[in-house]
Image (cartoon, rainbow, N blue to C red; front, side):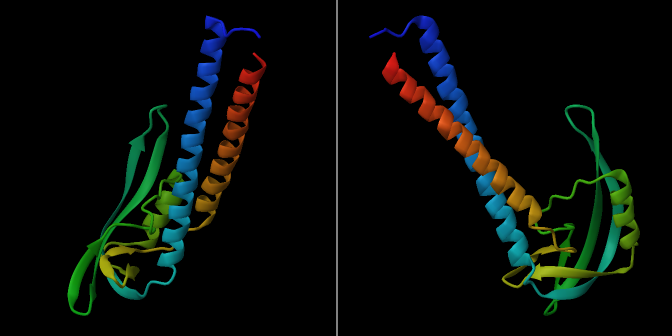
Length: 166
């Protein structure tokens, strides 16, 4: 039986750490995808009321690689059973980075002082949004997470099966 050399131990350790990290990231992607899908699906059943747009503008941010992302920021207010609420979310997950042209198109839909349809959580109207998101993003994260978990699981198994041959 061959003993593990220092070099082999380093390779085995690196593969285990890499596979473990991939498993954690894959599980995280699956959890995020399920949360996203659940959030959007639940919001589709929320009641709606008319609100008023207080302000709308394009907000830009620059990522680590220098790429600029755009977001239409809309602030609005509305009332439910005589209680006043305010909101600033376009979709129920709060994720709305988009291209410059899409953000400007959104801006045109929400003129200051204009009406808006507000979807709100009946259990807590402070949780609200103007538009329904899509569950596609959630399913993509679940799919990618599953691929990562399977690939890293097989990598883990290969490393441990290989240890028995050394």
